[in-house]
Image (cartoon, rainbow, N blue to C red):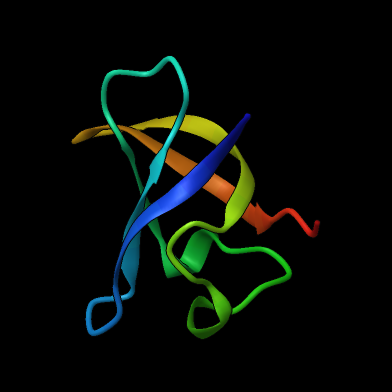
Length: 68
């Protein structure tokens, strides 16, 4: 799947991804980043990821930035 970084919470190491056509934004944690560091991400970056279920609902895993 693909989406856009909507929000980053730097002091906690997580953020949210907006996905076109999805009602809720997806949570992601810095541990799920592949090939990019949390510090290099910016709001508005395009990312690819897989959707996984967690106890708190769906979240994004294997998140990587799409280079343009």
